Length: 464
Image (cartoon, rainbow, N blue to C red; front, side, top):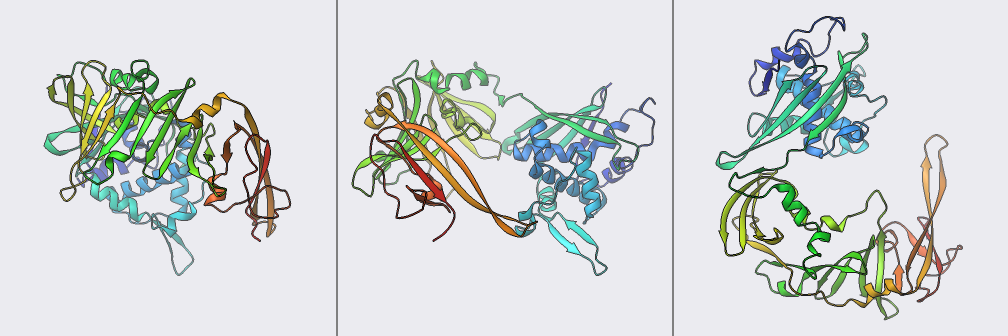
Protein backbone atom coordinates (compact mmCIF):
# COMPACT_ATOMS: atom_id res chain seq x y z
CA UNK A 1 0.00 0.00 0.00
CA UNK A 2 1.33 3.42 -0.93
CA UNK A 3 1.10 6.42 1.29
CA UNK A 4 1.49 9.99 0.02
CA UNK A 5 3.22 12.38 2.40
CA UNK A 6 3.11 15.96 1.14
CA UNK A 7 5.97 18.20 2.16
CA UNK A 8 4.70 21.74 2.54
CA UNK A 9 7.57 23.10 4.53
CA UNK A 10 5.84 26.34 5.27
CA UNK A 11 3.70 24.43 7.78
CA UNK A 12 5.38 24.15 11.13
CA UNK A 13 3.71 20.86 12.04
CA UNK A 14 6.17 19.02 9.80
CA UNK A 15 8.94 19.60 12.28
CA UNK A 16 7.52 16.87 14.43
CA UNK A 17 6.50 14.61 11.57
CA UNK A 18 9.94 13.88 10.13
CA UNK A 19 12.48 14.96 12.70
CA UNK A 20 11.69 12.15 15.17
CA UNK A 21 13.11 9.33 13.10
CA UNK A 22 15.49 11.18 10.81
CA UNK A 23 18.54 10.41 12.90
CA UNK A 24 18.02 7.05 14.56
CA UNK A 25 16.21 3.82 13.84
CA UNK A 26 16.94 0.91 16.15
CA UNK A 27 14.34 -1.35 14.55
CA UNK A 28 15.89 -4.69 13.48
CA UNK A 29 16.02 -5.17 9.71
CA UNK A 30 13.62 -8.12 9.76
CA UNK A 31 10.97 -6.35 11.87
CA UNK A 32 7.80 -5.40 9.94
CA UNK A 33 7.89 -1.69 9.26
CA UNK A 34 4.93 0.51 10.14
CA UNK A 35 3.51 2.30 7.14
CA UNK A 36 5.11 5.73 6.80
CA UNK A 37 8.01 5.04 9.20
CA UNK A 38 10.45 4.51 6.34
CA UNK A 39 9.43 7.70 4.56
CA UNK A 40 9.71 9.66 7.78
CA UNK A 41 13.19 8.26 8.37
CA UNK A 42 14.58 9.02 4.92
CA UNK A 43 12.62 12.20 4.09
CA UNK A 44 15.48 14.65 4.82
CA UNK A 45 17.90 12.74 2.56
CA UNK A 46 15.32 12.21 -0.20
CA UNK A 47 14.32 15.86 -0.13
CA UNK A 48 17.90 17.12 -0.21
CA UNK A 49 18.95 14.80 -3.04
CA UNK A 50 15.83 15.61 -5.07
CA UNK A 51 16.34 19.37 -4.80
CA UNK A 52 20.02 19.07 -5.70
CA UNK A 53 19.17 16.85 -8.67
CA UNK A 54 16.41 19.09 -9.96
CA UNK A 55 18.48 22.25 -9.75
CA UNK A 56 21.68 20.77 -11.20
CA UNK A 57 20.04 18.45 -13.74
CA UNK A 58 22.20 15.59 -12.44
CA UNK A 59 21.17 12.15 -11.29
CA UNK A 60 22.39 8.61 -10.80
CA UNK A 61 25.87 7.41 -9.87
CA UNK A 62 27.52 10.36 -11.59
CA UNK A 63 25.69 12.83 -9.36
CA UNK A 64 26.38 10.87 -6.17
CA UNK A 65 30.09 10.87 -7.02
CA UNK A 66 30.25 14.63 -7.70
CA UNK A 67 31.48 16.62 -4.66
CA UNK A 68 29.60 19.75 -5.77
CA UNK A 69 26.35 17.80 -6.05
CA UNK A 70 26.89 16.21 -2.63
CA UNK A 71 27.57 19.55 -0.97
CA UNK A 72 24.56 21.08 -2.68
CA UNK A 73 22.49 18.25 -1.22
CA UNK A 74 24.05 19.01 2.17
CA UNK A 75 22.93 22.61 1.76
CA UNK A 76 19.37 21.48 1.11
CA UNK A 77 19.55 19.19 4.12
CA UNK A 78 20.58 22.21 6.19
CA UNK A 79 17.69 24.17 4.65
CA UNK A 80 15.33 21.32 5.59
CA UNK A 81 16.45 21.51 9.23
CA UNK A 82 16.16 25.28 9.13
CA UNK A 83 12.52 25.08 8.00
CA UNK A 84 11.42 22.11 10.10
CA UNK A 85 13.40 22.62 13.31
CA UNK A 86 14.56 26.24 13.20
CA UNK A 87 18.16 25.03 13.04
CA UNK A 88 20.44 27.77 11.67
CA UNK A 89 23.86 26.14 11.90
CA UNK A 90 25.38 22.71 11.32
CA UNK A 91 28.61 21.38 12.72
CA UNK A 92 31.16 19.83 10.32
CA UNK A 93 30.45 16.49 12.02
CA UNK A 94 26.72 16.76 11.23
CA UNK A 95 27.50 17.60 7.60
CA UNK A 96 29.94 14.67 7.39
CA UNK A 97 27.26 12.34 8.78
CA UNK A 98 24.86 13.52 6.09
CA UNK A 99 27.44 13.18 3.31
CA UNK A 100 28.24 9.65 4.52
CA UNK A 101 24.52 8.85 4.29
CA UNK A 102 24.79 9.67 0.56
CA UNK A 103 27.78 7.37 0.17
CA UNK A 104 30.54 9.99 0.32
CA UNK A 105 33.70 9.02 2.19
CA UNK A 106 35.88 12.13 2.10
CA UNK A 107 34.34 15.28 0.70
CA UNK A 108 35.83 18.62 1.83
CA UNK A 109 33.95 21.89 1.52
CA UNK A 110 34.40 23.34 -2.01
CA UNK A 111 36.99 26.09 -1.81
CA UNK A 112 34.89 28.73 -3.55
CA UNK A 113 31.75 28.26 -1.47
CA UNK A 114 32.87 30.38 1.45
CA UNK A 115 34.38 32.96 -0.90
CA UNK A 116 31.15 33.43 -2.85
CA UNK A 117 28.80 33.26 0.12
CA UNK A 118 27.18 29.90 -0.58
CA UNK A 119 28.06 28.94 2.98
CA UNK A 120 29.48 30.93 5.87
CA UNK A 121 32.10 29.25 8.03
CA UNK A 122 31.68 30.48 11.59
CA UNK A 123 34.10 29.92 14.44
CA UNK A 124 33.35 30.16 18.15
CA UNK A 125 35.61 31.53 20.83
CA UNK A 126 36.34 28.04 22.11
CA UNK A 127 37.59 26.89 18.67
CA UNK A 128 34.38 25.30 17.41
CA UNK A 129 33.33 25.50 13.75
CA UNK A 130 29.85 25.73 12.28
CA UNK A 131 28.44 26.04 8.77
CA UNK A 132 25.69 28.49 7.89
CA UNK A 133 24.19 27.49 4.50
CA UNK A 134 22.94 30.99 3.93
CA UNK A 135 22.16 30.66 0.22
CA UNK A 136 20.14 27.46 0.59
CA UNK A 137 18.12 28.92 3.44
CA UNK A 138 17.29 31.96 1.32
CA UNK A 139 16.27 29.76 -1.60
CA UNK A 140 14.05 27.48 0.47
CA UNK A 141 12.19 30.50 1.82
CA UNK A 142 11.70 31.81 -1.72
CA UNK A 143 10.62 28.49 -3.26
CA UNK A 144 8.98 25.96 -0.98
CA UNK A 145 5.42 26.73 -0.04
CA UNK A 146 5.46 29.56 -2.59
CA UNK A 147 5.76 27.98 -6.04
CA UNK A 148 7.44 24.63 -5.31
CA UNK A 149 6.39 21.53 -3.40
CA UNK A 150 8.02 18.17 -2.74
CA UNK A 151 5.94 15.14 -1.84
CA UNK A 152 6.76 11.47 -1.32
CA UNK A 153 5.06 8.28 -2.42
CA UNK A 154 6.24 5.34 -0.33
CA UNK A 155 6.97 2.21 -2.34
CA UNK A 156 7.54 -1.42 -1.38
CA UNK A 157 11.07 -2.20 -0.25
CA UNK A 158 13.58 0.50 0.54
CA UNK A 159 12.64 3.05 -2.11
CA UNK A 160 10.23 5.91 -2.59
CA UNK A 161 9.12 8.26 -5.33
CA UNK A 162 9.81 11.93 -4.74
CA UNK A 163 7.47 14.25 -6.63
CA UNK A 164 8.72 17.81 -7.18
CA UNK A 165 5.90 20.10 -8.29
CA UNK A 166 6.23 23.64 -9.66
CA UNK A 167 3.33 26.04 -9.95
CA UNK A 168 3.21 28.73 -12.64
CA UNK A 169 0.89 31.51 -13.73
CA UNK A 170 -2.63 30.77 -14.99
CA UNK A 171 -2.94 27.77 -12.66
CA UNK A 172 -0.37 25.77 -14.63
CA UNK A 173 1.83 23.21 -12.90
CA UNK A 174 4.46 20.63 -13.78
CA UNK A 175 5.90 17.62 -11.96
CA UNK A 176 9.22 15.78 -11.87
CA UNK A 177 9.27 12.26 -10.44
CA UNK A 178 12.41 10.74 -8.93
CA UNK A 179 12.98 7.20 -7.71
CA UNK A 180 15.15 7.34 -4.59
CA UNK A 181 16.65 4.07 -3.35
CA UNK A 182 18.04 3.29 0.08
CA UNK A 183 19.62 0.46 1.99
CA UNK A 184 19.75 -0.19 5.72
CA UNK A 185 22.79 1.49 7.24
CA UNK A 186 25.16 0.10 9.86
CA UNK A 187 23.93 0.28 13.43
CA UNK A 188 26.51 2.93 14.37
CA UNK A 189 25.60 5.23 11.45
CA UNK A 190 23.97 8.56 12.24
CA UNK A 191 21.25 7.95 9.62
CA UNK A 192 19.27 4.69 9.66
CA UNK A 193 19.36 4.38 5.86
CA UNK A 194 21.99 5.12 3.23
CA UNK A 195 20.92 6.59 -0.10
CA UNK A 196 22.09 4.33 -2.96
CA UNK A 197 20.21 5.48 -6.06
CA UNK A 198 18.60 8.57 -7.55
CA UNK A 199 16.84 8.40 -10.91
CA UNK A 200 14.61 10.90 -12.72
CA UNK A 201 11.68 9.19 -14.37
CA UNK A 202 11.45 10.53 -17.91
CA UNK A 203 7.93 11.75 -18.47
CA UNK A 204 8.51 14.74 -20.77
CA UNK A 205 6.58 18.01 -20.85
CA UNK A 206 2.86 18.07 -20.22
CA UNK A 207 1.14 18.42 -23.59
CA UNK A 208 -2.26 19.91 -24.30
CA UNK A 209 -4.69 17.06 -25.01
CA UNK A 210 -5.64 18.71 -28.31
CA UNK A 211 -2.08 18.35 -29.65
CA UNK A 212 -2.01 15.35 -31.97
CA UNK A 213 1.72 14.56 -31.83
CA UNK A 214 3.98 13.45 -29.01
CA UNK A 215 6.97 15.28 -27.58
CA UNK A 216 9.21 12.43 -28.72
CA UNK A 217 7.94 12.87 -32.29
CA UNK A 218 8.65 16.60 -32.14
CA UNK A 219 12.21 16.05 -30.92
CA UNK A 220 12.87 13.35 -33.48
CA UNK A 221 11.60 15.53 -36.32
CA UNK A 222 14.04 18.28 -35.29
CA UNK A 223 17.16 16.16 -35.05
CA UNK A 224 19.41 17.77 -37.62
CA UNK A 225 20.22 14.56 -39.47
CA UNK A 226 16.48 13.98 -39.93
CA UNK A 227 15.84 17.57 -41.00
CA UNK A 228 18.54 17.38 -43.68
CA UNK A 229 16.89 14.31 -45.17
CA UNK A 230 14.08 16.60 -46.33
CA UNK A 231 15.72 20.00 -46.73
CA UNK A 232 19.04 21.23 -48.23
CA UNK A 233 20.05 23.25 -45.16
CA UNK A 234 18.74 25.28 -42.23
CA UNK A 235 19.19 29.04 -41.87
CA UNK A 236 18.53 30.51 -38.45
CA UNK A 237 18.11 34.25 -38.10
CA UNK A 238 17.02 36.57 -35.33
CA UNK A 239 14.78 39.59 -35.69
CA UNK A 240 15.09 41.97 -32.77
CA UNK A 241 14.33 45.24 -34.50
CA UNK A 242 18.00 46.22 -34.32
CA UNK A 243 19.90 47.40 -37.36
CA UNK A 244 21.96 44.66 -38.97
CA UNK A 245 19.76 41.71 -37.98
CA UNK A 246 19.58 40.60 -41.61
CA UNK A 247 23.38 40.41 -41.81
CA UNK A 248 23.71 37.90 -38.96
CA UNK A 249 22.67 34.30 -38.77
CA UNK A 250 23.61 30.64 -38.64
CA UNK A 251 23.65 27.91 -41.28
CA UNK A 252 23.28 24.23 -40.43
CA UNK A 253 24.31 21.93 -43.24
CA UNK A 254 25.87 18.66 -44.30
CA UNK A 255 29.39 18.87 -45.73
CA UNK A 256 30.94 15.67 -46.98
CA UNK A 257 28.71 13.52 -44.81
CA UNK A 258 29.38 15.48 -41.59
CA UNK A 259 27.16 18.05 -39.91
CA UNK A 260 28.42 21.63 -39.83
CA UNK A 261 27.39 24.84 -38.09
CA UNK A 262 28.57 28.14 -39.52
CA UNK A 263 27.57 31.44 -37.91
CA UNK A 264 28.20 34.74 -39.64
CA UNK A 265 28.00 38.47 -39.07
CA UNK A 266 29.33 41.67 -40.58
CA UNK A 267 32.88 40.91 -39.46
CA UNK A 268 32.68 37.32 -38.26
CA UNK A 269 32.51 33.78 -39.62
CA UNK A 270 32.95 30.81 -37.33
CA UNK A 271 31.36 27.66 -36.08
CA UNK A 272 31.80 23.96 -35.48
CA UNK A 273 32.79 21.15 -37.82
CA UNK A 274 34.13 17.67 -37.12
CA UNK A 275 34.54 18.51 -33.40
CA UNK A 276 36.56 21.64 -34.26
CA UNK A 277 35.47 25.04 -33.00
CA UNK A 278 36.90 27.59 -35.41
CA UNK A 279 36.88 31.15 -36.74
CA UNK A 280 37.53 31.98 -40.38
CA UNK A 281 39.52 35.18 -40.12
CA UNK A 282 42.23 37.40 -41.50
CA UNK A 283 45.38 36.36 -39.66
CA UNK A 284 48.53 38.30 -38.75
CA UNK A 285 50.27 37.27 -41.97
CA UNK A 286 47.41 38.80 -43.95
CA UNK A 287 46.00 35.48 -45.18
CA UNK A 288 42.45 34.32 -44.56
CA UNK A 289 42.04 30.84 -43.10
CA UNK A 290 40.15 28.76 -40.59
CA UNK A 291 41.76 28.90 -37.14
CA UNK A 292 40.79 26.17 -34.68
CA UNK A 293 40.56 27.30 -31.07
CA UNK A 294 39.30 24.08 -29.51
CA UNK A 295 38.88 20.46 -30.52
CA UNK A 296 36.17 18.75 -28.50
CA UNK A 297 36.97 15.61 -26.57
CA UNK A 298 34.60 12.82 -25.66
CA UNK A 299 33.84 14.65 -22.41
CA UNK A 300 32.86 18.01 -23.96
CA UNK A 301 31.70 17.00 -27.43
CA UNK A 302 28.68 18.88 -28.78
CA UNK A 303 26.28 16.86 -30.93
CA UNK A 304 25.08 19.08 -33.76
CA UNK A 305 22.15 16.71 -34.17
CA UNK A 306 20.73 18.44 -31.08
CA UNK A 307 21.24 22.00 -32.32
CA UNK A 308 17.54 22.52 -33.09
CA UNK A 309 16.15 20.40 -30.26
CA UNK A 310 18.19 22.46 -27.78
CA UNK A 311 15.75 25.32 -28.46
CA UNK A 312 13.12 23.08 -26.84
CA UNK A 313 15.21 22.19 -23.81
CA UNK A 314 13.57 23.11 -20.52
CA UNK A 315 9.98 23.16 -21.78
CA UNK A 316 7.64 21.74 -19.13
CA UNK A 317 4.16 22.69 -20.37
CA UNK A 318 2.95 22.86 -23.98
CA UNK A 319 -0.43 24.31 -24.92
CA UNK A 320 -1.98 24.57 -28.36
CA UNK A 321 -2.38 28.26 -29.14
CA UNK A 322 -3.59 28.32 -32.73
CA UNK A 323 -3.23 26.79 -36.18
CA UNK A 324 -2.79 28.98 -39.21
CA UNK A 325 -2.18 27.71 -42.73
CA UNK A 326 0.77 25.30 -42.52
CA UNK A 327 1.95 26.37 -39.04
CA UNK A 328 1.01 25.19 -35.55
CA UNK A 329 1.62 27.74 -32.81
CA UNK A 330 2.42 26.36 -29.34
CA UNK A 331 2.49 28.29 -26.06
CA UNK A 332 5.42 26.84 -24.12
CA UNK A 333 6.20 27.36 -20.46
CA UNK A 334 9.79 26.70 -19.50
CA UNK A 335 11.09 25.34 -16.27
CA UNK A 336 12.07 28.77 -14.97
CA UNK A 337 8.55 30.09 -15.59
CA UNK A 338 9.25 32.18 -18.68
CA UNK A 339 7.24 31.60 -21.82
CA UNK A 340 7.76 31.44 -25.56
CA UNK A 341 5.52 31.03 -28.58
CA UNK A 342 6.93 28.28 -30.75
CA UNK A 343 5.77 27.55 -34.29
CA UNK A 344 6.27 24.17 -35.95
CA UNK A 345 5.50 23.01 -39.46
CA UNK A 346 2.17 21.20 -39.63
CA UNK A 347 3.50 18.54 -41.96
CA UNK A 348 7.09 17.87 -40.84
CA UNK A 349 7.02 19.31 -37.26
CA UNK A 350 10.30 21.17 -37.86
CA UNK A 351 10.73 24.47 -36.02
CA UNK A 352 9.56 27.46 -38.01
CA UNK A 353 9.67 30.32 -35.51
CA UNK A 354 10.16 31.26 -31.86
CA UNK A 355 8.68 34.47 -30.46
CA UNK A 356 9.75 35.66 -27.04
CA UNK A 357 10.05 38.74 -24.91
CA UNK A 358 12.76 39.67 -22.43
CA UNK A 359 10.53 42.08 -20.51
CA UNK A 360 8.10 44.93 -20.80
CA UNK A 361 10.86 47.43 -21.60
CA UNK A 362 12.35 45.34 -24.44
CA UNK A 363 10.67 44.87 -27.84
CA UNK A 364 9.61 41.28 -28.60
CA UNK A 365 12.18 39.21 -30.48
CA UNK A 366 11.77 36.35 -32.87
CA UNK A 367 13.91 33.59 -34.30
CA UNK A 368 13.14 32.32 -37.76
CA UNK A 369 14.08 28.95 -39.25
CA UNK A 370 14.27 28.71 -43.04
CA UNK A 371 14.79 25.44 -44.88
CA UNK A 372 14.23 25.98 -48.59
CA UNK A 373 17.58 27.48 -49.70
CA UNK A 374 20.91 25.64 -49.95
CA UNK A 375 23.71 26.98 -47.78
CA UNK A 376 26.50 29.05 -49.32
CA UNK A 377 29.59 27.18 -50.44
CA UNK A 378 32.27 27.50 -47.77
CA UNK A 379 35.63 26.53 -49.33
CA UNK A 380 37.26 26.04 -45.96
CA UNK A 381 34.84 23.19 -45.24
CA UNK A 382 35.71 21.66 -48.61
CA UNK A 383 39.34 21.53 -47.45
CA UNK A 384 38.47 18.45 -45.38
CA UNK A 385 38.12 16.52 -48.63
CA UNK A 386 41.76 17.23 -49.52
CA UNK A 387 45.17 16.44 -48.07
CA UNK A 388 45.43 16.38 -44.28
CA UNK A 389 48.36 17.22 -42.04
CA UNK A 390 49.35 16.39 -38.45
CA UNK A 391 49.66 19.06 -35.79
CA UNK A 392 51.31 17.95 -32.55
CA UNK A 393 50.99 19.89 -29.31
CA UNK A 394 53.10 19.74 -26.19
CA UNK A 395 51.35 21.27 -23.19
CA UNK A 396 53.53 22.30 -20.24
CA UNK A 397 52.09 23.56 -16.96
CA UNK A 398 53.27 23.99 -13.39
CA UNK A 399 51.27 22.97 -10.35
CA UNK A 400 52.11 23.74 -6.73
CA UNK A 401 52.51 20.68 -4.53
CA UNK A 402 51.43 21.62 -1.02
CA UNK A 403 53.17 18.63 0.55
CA UNK A 404 56.58 19.36 -0.95
CA UNK A 405 56.10 23.10 -1.10
CA UNK A 406 57.46 23.12 -4.64
CA UNK A 407 56.18 23.72 -8.13
CA UNK A 408 55.96 20.57 -10.21
CA UNK A 409 56.12 20.45 -14.00
CA UNK A 410 53.39 18.56 -15.84
CA UNK A 411 53.54 17.74 -19.55
CA UNK A 412 50.91 16.26 -21.81
CA UNK A 413 50.86 15.75 -25.56
CA UNK A 414 48.14 15.98 -28.17
CA UNK A 415 48.11 15.04 -31.84
CA UNK A 416 45.40 16.08 -34.27
CA UNK A 417 44.72 15.74 -37.98
CA UNK A 418 43.59 18.87 -39.84
CA UNK A 419 43.30 20.07 -43.43
CA UNK A 420 46.50 21.49 -44.83
CA UNK A 421 45.19 25.07 -44.74
CA UNK A 422 43.61 25.00 -41.27
CA UNK A 423 45.57 26.45 -38.35
CA UNK A 424 45.38 25.17 -34.78
CA UNK A 425 45.97 27.86 -32.17
CA UNK A 426 44.15 26.89 -28.92
CA UNK A 427 42.04 29.45 -27.11
CA UNK A 428 44.20 28.84 -24.04
CA UNK A 429 47.12 30.37 -25.96
CA UNK A 430 45.12 33.14 -27.61
CA UNK A 431 43.30 34.40 -24.52
CA UNK A 432 44.30 32.07 -21.67
CA UNK A 433 47.32 31.49 -19.47
CA UNK A 434 49.41 29.59 -22.03
CA UNK A 435 51.95 31.05 -24.47
CA UNK A 436 52.49 29.32 -27.82
CA UNK A 437 55.85 28.67 -29.51
CA UNK A 438 56.98 26.63 -32.51
CA UNK A 439 60.18 25.38 -30.86
CA UNK A 440 60.92 23.49 -27.63
CA UNK A 441 63.23 26.27 -26.39
CA UNK A 442 60.34 28.76 -26.26
CA UNK A 443 62.26 31.26 -28.36
CA UNK A 444 60.63 33.95 -30.44
CA UNK A 445 56.98 34.81 -30.92
CA UNK A 446 54.56 32.31 -32.42
CA UNK A 447 54.18 32.45 -36.20
CA UNK A 448 52.01 30.21 -38.36
CA UNK A 449 54.33 27.55 -39.92
CA UNK A 450 52.50 27.58 -43.25
CA UNK A 451 50.06 25.48 -45.23
CA UNK A 452 50.52 21.81 -45.98
CA UNK A 453 53.28 21.05 -43.44
CA UNK A 454 53.19 18.99 -40.28
CA UNK A 455 54.36 20.95 -37.25
CA UNK A 456 54.60 20.89 -33.47
CA UNK A 457 53.20 23.58 -31.22
CA UNK A 458 54.74 24.08 -27.76
CA UNK A 459 52.52 25.66 -25.11
CA UNK A 460 53.60 26.64 -21.62
CA UNK A 461 52.30 28.55 -18.63
CA UNK A 462 55.86 29.64 -17.76
CA UNK A 463 56.32 33.35 -18.24
CA UNK A 464 59.34 35.09 -19.68
